[in-house]
Length: 82
Image (cartoon, rainbow, N blue to C red):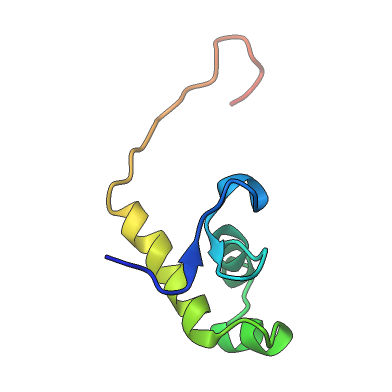
């Protein structure tokens, strides 16, 4: 699958996937959504972001979760973490 609005460059945010032409990462879009913002809220606050780009960022993240690797960890004995 090719993404029209997502790009990754080592010169921008250390290579994190971002909306093209911005320094707004897929990660930050997901954080905004998790905090309760809607796609419309994000588009209203950042009018230079195309709404389709915001939606594509969500799709981009979901495509990478399809190959999710889960690592289960347990605290070390005596670490004080329950």
